[in-house]
Length: 640
Image (tube, rainbow, N blue to C red):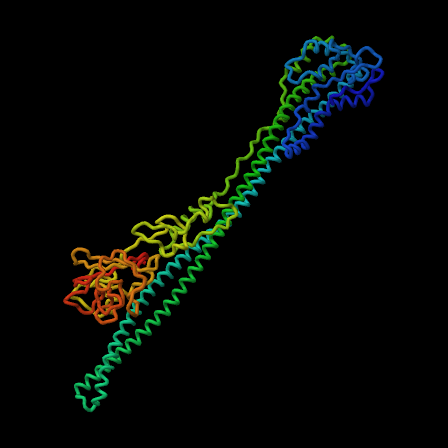
């Protein structure tokens, strides 16, 4: 486009040359408007800008050529019109076209040259065609402006499409969140049912222990009746019934009735124990199954929570990445469009002024009219003084929309915060198993399950013990991993009160402050610590000086059927006289339990049946009161 005008021959432009001149004026703008969309598309891909100079090329054209063999320059765009050149070698029309668009006024020499321009029919025809070409140029400028606006708006609309897709992905993530919430509620409800099953298990174990103790007591009584009757029968057999007096016969009948009643009571106690044992087995199985179900529900909840977490993160990441890319493209295109719009306005103003001057030139009816018209100079100058409005070319700014808000990210499954939020407030007596994340996004190292030790590796502070399920749950603090060790009273006996051994299993349990109290039937394996042992102490409250004997043992003296102690371990046991070695089942008839291990004595007596020297056998001495305590890490039945 910046090449010189087509060659002329014989001082006249051919028809082809004339059309080339008109194209020379219009082509840069037409080409720029046609190429705008293609260049913009290329910009979106490569990020390159648009050529800023294309719309200004018209103001930089220099169509001067010399006639071959001649000595004077000719004006190629004025067919057959020879115009005297100015001092710079250009005719006034050429100089008018080349004047920069932002010129405030025409040079005096140019105005003078235009006024003196020879107006011939050929010049008038050419000027008319120039005006016609300028009209098409103005239309091209407006088309280019509309094309740029549509381009800008099309890219801007892409933000809406991104937002629509983001909302769809958020909706899908929210559905995952609803599924996770339902799984959470199911898990919590199951843990509540697990707690109820555990409470039933604890209660049936307590009743089973009572039934076991009642059975053992009835068996001991039956053995006594059997031994007594057996010892009396040889004498009866030797003498014969006829030799027995009526009183002896009545006594024999009474013993027989007692034996019958005792055996019947023992049989009923055995049946009751078996019934309770079957119930206990069934309830224990129900509890184990319920805990298994709850653990499965926990795993399903954690999987659903991972799906929600992954969906939320993927939705946000995909949207932000696409938004940032489109924003960079949009800013680049908008910047180039603004530059092109500014160039078009400058070109519009320049060409409007040129059009005004050409219109004044075309108004001359014959050669010499402009020179004879005294107002021609002012009219030409006025074309460059008037205000040119280019409102249709203005492209207002259209900022990119702000980012859409992403979903609030849920707590990362199986992190410390997640475990605390979801599992800290489960019902007492229940606990979650180790959390196992299935999320695709890795959890922070400080909160992954691999860095969270199980409670079984945590050392509980003094006064507390590890939870019974410490090997199943995660944690590293006493609040989560430990339970308070509480001393629980099993028996208190104050002389001279005595009663049969079985009565001590359950005596006035609702009044633990009473002088005489018995709750030995409640002692079960649930009272054992993590080491599998009971932690006992005997207290003789009215003894002066040292009055506490504290130890551990793994055997349950209440449910034992014979003498002996297993797993004895002294904790603070200052008394060792009279064969001390823990508490055992007393096989005689003097007390329920004793501490003279594997001996027929009943020192350290618990549950005395008859007084010894008007008191209770203690650590080699006679005491007036005795208490037995167990240190238990679990909830008592009453607390539950």
